[in-house]
Amino acid sequence: MSRAPAPVSAILFVCTANICRSPTALGVFGSLLAARGAASHFELDSAGTHEYRVGEAPSPLAIECARRRGYEISRSVARRLSAGDLERFDHILAMDRANLACLGAIAPTSARHKIELLLEYGESFRGADVPDPYGRSPRDYELALDMIEDGCRGLARTLLRDYGRDSTWVRK
Image (cartoon, rainbow, N blue to C red; front, side, top):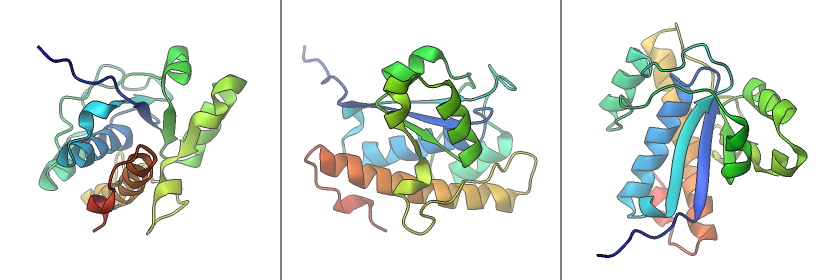
């Protein structure tokens, strides 16, 4: 029996409550990797900076919006970021600058270099915050998903290139 290769990189997506943006990013990025046959090379997870919704499934509008684009996120369960996450993950990607500041404030010096804004990898939305759609309209969820897809495509391109893989598949 052959074993799956050990992941080459562990990636954590972080938002505030872990019920909209970060589980969506987890689903999008996982789908991009699976489409390229690279999923086994990465360990993926998501977490929230706060414990507002720990144990809950993603927002129904987040699930619906993601599903319409072919992403399955309904099995995610919200959890709060743990101290061990900051050491364990190689890349910790915040959805907005408030999440980035929170992560920076709690991270030990040895982990700060791992923390980035997801959309630093984007093209169309480069450097922007992914706005929190919670409690807003379906259009707000669609915009958040547009932005997350942009950031995840750029992240995939970068990481797969860094790991010696052809990354042309992630271009629209």
